Picture: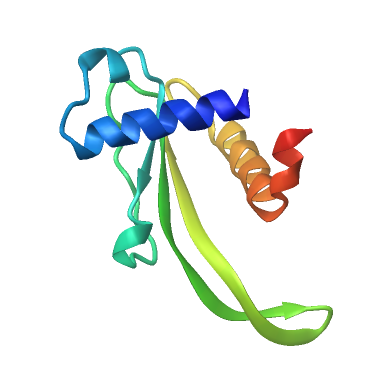
Length: 113
């Protein structure tokens, strides 16, 4: 399943780069991701694309000081912000989604289980 999702994302990204996105590529979508990380953007808030229910804004990863086991060391952090149409979902569901996303990003092997 993960391989299929990866292949479909790569194919759609290629069509987007070439300006060949088809209406069927986005018809019926309920969620979008907006990634500005490649532009060294620290954080931003994305606007929901109607009629979708939510959009996830992804910023660039940055090396910053972090505390681990009481010691300050270099670590990587990335900000992600979710905007949700509260007519469709509430903030608690969005918060749970963000917690699970953080778990997967911090421990990618969990996506394979």
